[in-house]
Image 1 (cartoon, rainbow, N blue to C red):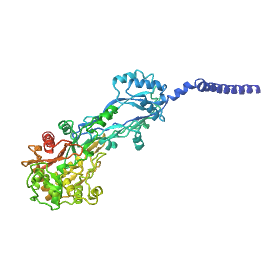
Image 2: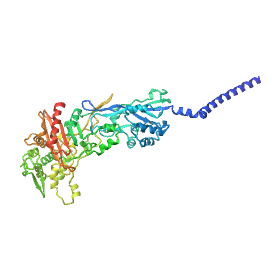
Image 3: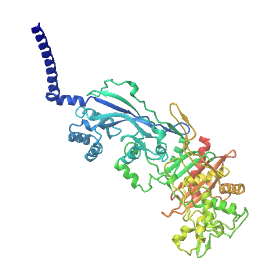
Image 4: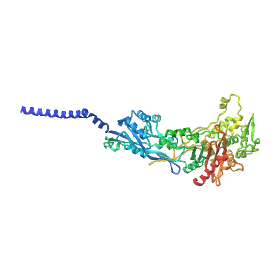
Length: 588
């Protein structure tokens, strides 16, 4: 019996010994003999959190016509962790793509701490290049194609802005805002201002993949988070009017055109010239394209509507006239010295634009023929600082508050500014004469001047100019609470306003009116032309600003500026006439 127990016990221990011997042999096989092989298999079978990008919202005009939308594009990425032969990869990429070795080395360096992240190499691959790369994917498993969206801009403009890949500085600034180093973000314009609405929120999928990248389906679907697509934004812009203005504006000229609704402040057309193709930036601008834009003599990247600052010329006589009326310096019949082509102020002769002179004028004839001598004489009664304050209270010197990321304020110096530059003893007589006709040190933006004339047409009520109308996605519609819309009152009485409106009417319809080129049968036009001296050139800037009424209601306010365009009446006026005619025939 004891011998039997001994044999049973011995067999038990032998079985245990054999079991552990087998395990040890397997461990030796896996970790020592075949260790590298299984390490590679383990390395290529891992959990992957796959980002699912949200679809960026479209930008539409007031009639729901697309201005900016998305198109599919194939982009090429690589993952550093899977690179077997760096130099072979670099040679292959430089042979087949328009990129340099330095560029690829920089990608390796900048992403050295993110070996498993997908790093963008190039965007929007052409089919023939994509085919060449695809043929060699077995040699370079680190390369990955991704079908993603490409932003497409249907018209060249400044107000939509453009998107681009986030840079390192932006990534650090917006860290935690659902962004990666491959994210597209708004760089300028509407794309930037409404980034939060347009971009949406990315989702993710949690999967475990094998060495071939196939999902092993080990995780439940409830761990995934679907993306929330961005809002589509509807603007107040009328695409048809915007495109028409692009067609009729003088070629090879710089300038700006604004058309807005005086009752709401909604902008119907926003044109800065020359335009540029935002698609260059959306697809990754080349050095040649960037150099062209940077070095172009007309500076196409400058948004002249909000970032341009100009002496307003005779369009500013409206402000001077309103100030004089408010201060009781004149009435409707007040006449000053006769215009014989100019007048002496101190030891300097100030010329009128019409060298033969206009004779003695009152506020109506002085405005309609744009007699500078009338305003020179009138300015001798101005208090400079009060005049500056009045201009500021008409909202011409501050930013309008338009829903764009950048806007320049106007400029009108006070007495202290001149004293600091000219010394203690100086005279403001000549300074006031210049300022009264919109020359000298005064600067305004085209948008601010348009908003001012819109307020005159809207019975003295100033509305914040804006581009946003509404936004929507699959589930939500937004029309209020996005744009801060402010209504303010011009600092003038109803009597002053009525007189100013009459002067603008006379400036178009009287016999020798400088604005007569803007007349449109069927509409009532109220406008003032301007010819502003240009410190950077011999030829002055051409202006016209005003508003148009139908059925006794102001429907549009407008401004046309042509840099170095010459006379406002003969050059800017006809452009305004075409715009008003087109609006009457096709839009209203």
